[in-house]
Length: 135
Image 1 (cartoon, rainbow, N blue to C red):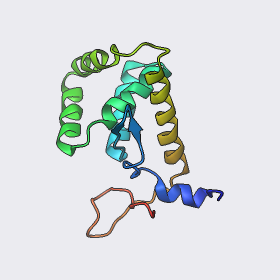
Image 2 (cartoon, one colour):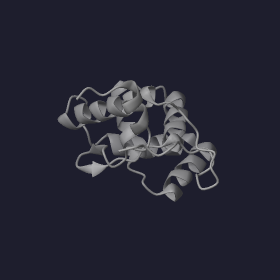
Image 3 (cartoon, rainbow, N blue to C red):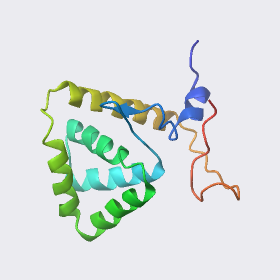
Image 4 (cartoon, helix red, strand yellow):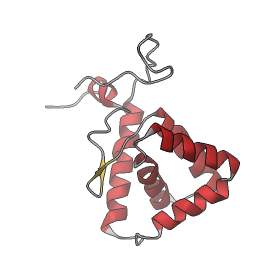
C-alpha cells in the first residue's frame, strides 16, 4: 500500500506511540517542536546534536516537565544546554544510538513536513493543538 501525502498528514505530530528511541517512546507535539527550534537555534547544534536534542525533549512525556524546561531555558539558556550536554555525552558521535536518533528525527521531520498543519479550534480541543491523527 502506497502512503499518500494526505495519509501522512493525518499522522503528523501526534504519532507519539510510533516514535521510539532506545526502546522508549518519544512524544512529539507543537510544544516540543517550538522548544526544540528555540534551543537548537540558540545553541547552533550540528545534525547529530540536533537529533539527540529532539530525543531528549521527546522523552519529556509530561507537559509539566516540558513547561519546566521551557521556563528554565528562558531564564537561563546555558543551564539547559549544560543539562542537555550531560545527556548527549553518554553517546559516541558515530554510535548506533546516534544513528538511531538521526533516523527518528528524520521520521518526525518528514511527518511534520507532510502535515496539513490544521489547527483544531473545537471547544474540546486543546487551544492551538493539532488535530488528532486518523489511524
